[in-house]
Image (tube, rainbow, N blue to C red; front, side, top):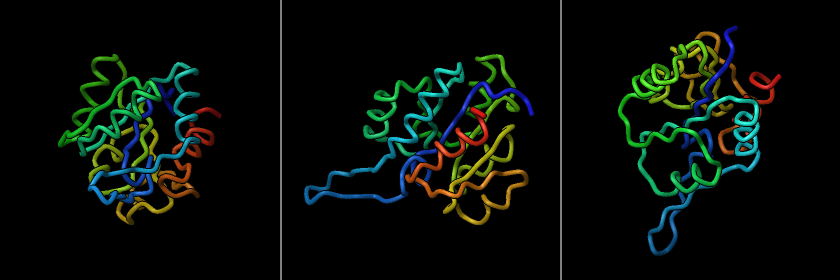
Length: 155
């Protein structure tokens, strides 16, 4: 396996439990898992760049990325694969040097292309059927990202 130099993650259903929580005033909330955040920090300490890729565009994710000091935040893009490919070109690395974890159909293309791929236990069936994907025991928002990092990246 090629050396992992970049880890990317989806947000809804991966860093979160895929729930959309609304206050009485209509404010949206998301629940993140602190273990996932620590795992991403450990990757950074090991010299691995971190990226969050989400088709949503929300200040909640911006705040979480800032708190974790994520190296690259991409929101509102149409093609995660196109986005990560451009980033790989900028970093002079190949897709084989990328680890990515995602859970739903908008992650299919990128998961099919990267060197190391994983999904939470509650990912959709089509994602779980991608060849060579690592299926975590934990669900999205319950530490699946940290499980991926601990068991496959920082081993």
